[in-house]
Each structure stands twice: as structure tokens, then as C-alpha cells.
Length: 502
Image (cartoon, rainbow, N blue to C red; front, side, top):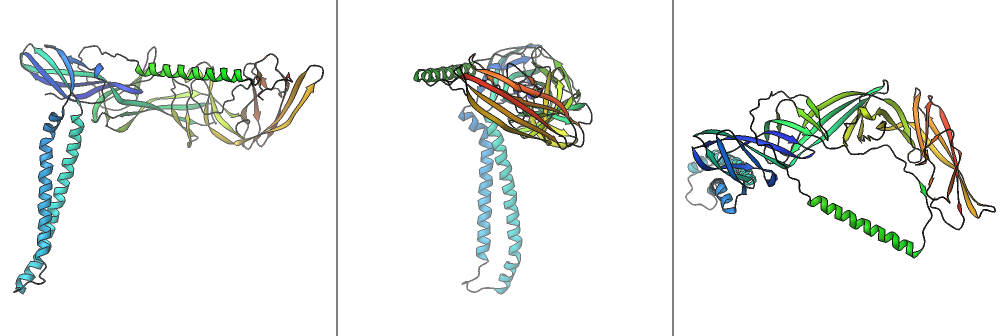
């Protein structure tokens, strides 16, 4: 039998590749070795065994203990628990007997001197017995904990291999495998102050594992995946205009399309779940020594992901979280308040940065600290298709918004057999800041997806209109206590025998 310890791990966002090493005593010639206590969370198909020079191996098997073997391993400790429980019963009987003998009611020929002597020494006897009971309960508690840990190990895997050694000696063995119960999450902290034109972005790692064993003095490498998209600032989606379809055939076609889409999504999900990935490590041995001081990480960028090689050796305990600092960078930014009055009556403070400066950021929760004050958490969103990106720094209560509909009038267009609805909105922005602030205000007008539906802009107060999405954007500076008014007027015209989804 041989035991190994985890020496090196490469941790992905979900799962990790583990290397564990140990030694085994071999005689010259052929024999079978057994390596115990491999975690039950590993992927058996990925297990590899590497041996040092002078020994070869084959016929590697990853096995589990049967019930008989499990009972044999726990028999000794279960017997100890049984003996302790019997001793506890004896002590309880002693207490009952001592208390019963202290009751002299109804007894004849009582010797007063003996009664006084018994009563005087009884507390000492009881105290001694109670102390023994406390010690036995502590021993039982420790034995039960030991039994629980042993039962966990009984569910672990065993690795057996047939080996052939060139001579007697102690040989190094290394077991490598992929473990599903290993993970890490990026945790960002963003420190901002609109007194300058930069922000500080700190990246930390939250590392965890549930393999039932504690990792001690382990070399750790963290590997990212491709960034995903998320965000907090309200987004206006294009408001497309189409005609309602009221016929039974149209409804039936629409429901059929929905059903087909659902079936297609289900099939794709099944394929994704049942897909298999084969992982194999190079079979080589290398003796490496590492410093033991914890510190920052060395960053390695490859074609598809980022690697953070943590400096020093790390302890990662089972069913717990370990935090590590990965990077700290200063990013140039432009502070402004993003206002979306159609969805919220206050603004959002944002730091506009170049996407190229934050392209390595992952979808992750970030804690925001503005001028030293914790502002809450957001989800970061690095959209690489855009030149700039707004990092939301939380609600800006000092910028208030009011969007009021001033006009909605529907009329018939003479001689053209069409209807026309005119819309008008008045938007007011007020700042209670004590200094000028930059405002980015966003609203929208609908976008036609049918050539018979016409949208005409009448007054957008100088705003920039995105022809594809209908987004209207204004950029301006607002002075302290100033209120600025913007008008948004447009009209929609369509055939009067149809209904538009406005």
C-alpha cells in the first residue's frame, strides 16, 4: 500500500487537473502496487500513473472497496466505540447504585457513624465517576469523528498497477487526474474617484475544493475560460413596429414555430450534456522546488485563455474557500452619469474605459468602492465588439430624471387611407451636485420593420439617432443645480385597416 499527497493543481473555473506524488518500496522484479485514498470526485477515465526511472508499469486499474473490505477497515474503530459505550453504561450504573445506597429510609439497625461517613465521601465518589463519564464521552466523540473520516476514505478509489523494478529501492510515483469538485471564481474590486481620470481594478481569486482532504503546500495555477457578457446599466432594446396577425392560420403557424424551436433547443442540450472530453497528461517526471511565501500571480496569456501561476505554495482546505491576489492595474477612464429616463428616474454613475484596457475581465461579480465607500456589487461586462465600455458604479441619486408624455394624438390622413399617431415627450434632467457633471442621456424612438409603416422624427433636441436601433443619445454637461429640458417628438403612420403594436 502507498499513499500520495497533492503537490500541484491546475484549477479551471469548474474542475481541475491534479498531480499527487508519493513513494513506494519495490523489490526487484514484478509486483503489484496499490495507491490508496484517491478522491471519489475524480474522473476515472482521466487517471494516469507516472513512475520514476528504473521501474515500468502497466495494467492500471481504478477500483472501489466492496462492503466486506469497508467493514474490515472500520472494524477496529467500531470495536473501540462499542467498548467506550459499555464503560459509559457501567459508570451510569455506578451512579445509580451510589445514589440508591445513600437512601437510608426503611433500613433497620442503622449505624449513625457509618451513615455520616458514607454521606461525607459520596460527593467525592460521584465527582470522580462524572469526570470519568466526561472523559469517555470525549473519547467517544473523537472516535466517531475518526469513524466518519474513515467512512469517507472508504468511498475513495484505489489505484492498482503491475510494476517491474530493475532493483530493490524507493521509487517516486505520480498520479494525475481531472477532479470535478475543484473550482475558482474571479472576484474583482474596483476603486474609483471622480476627482481624477482613472480607476483601480484589483483581481482576486476565490479557490475551493470538496475532495474530503486538505491540500497543504501545493503549487496552484488558475486557468480562465472565454469571457461572457453581463451588465447592470439599463439597456433600451429596439422597439420594432409590426402588424398584428389575427388569423387562425397565423396563430397556428406561430405556435408550430415555437414548438419546433423548443424541440431544437432540447436536442442541442442533450448533445451538449452527453458529449465526452478526453484529457491526457504527458507522462514525464520532474522534481521541482518552490518558495513557500504567498504573493501575487504570474500571468501567462495563451491563444484561448489566461493562466495565473500563483507564487509560492498554498494550503487549500476541504469544503472551504481560499483567497489569492492575482493582479492590480490602473485604468484610464471618463466619469459620467448615464441616464435612461424611460426605465429609471435616477442616473447611474459610470466609468467609461477603452475596451482594449479591460479585455481580460471575465463575467464576474465586482465590489465597487467609490471614494473609499462600498457602493455594492455589479456584474462586469467586457463587450469586445465596442471601442469603449461603461463600468457601472451604482445609482447616482444626485441626478434626477422626469419623463412626461405631452402628446399622443391619432388621426386619419386624408386621401391616403392611412392613420397617424403623433407622440411627444418632455424629459427633464436635474443635478444636485456641487460641481459640473457629464451626462449621457439615452431614450428611443420605434423602428419600422415594414415598409408600409413610416416613422418620422419631428424634434429630438439635437440628439444622435441610431437608425438601426432607434436609440437617441444626448451628451452634455450639467451645471450645479441646473435643470435641462429635452424634447422627443415623432409620429407613426400606417394603413388604417391594420393595427400596429405600439
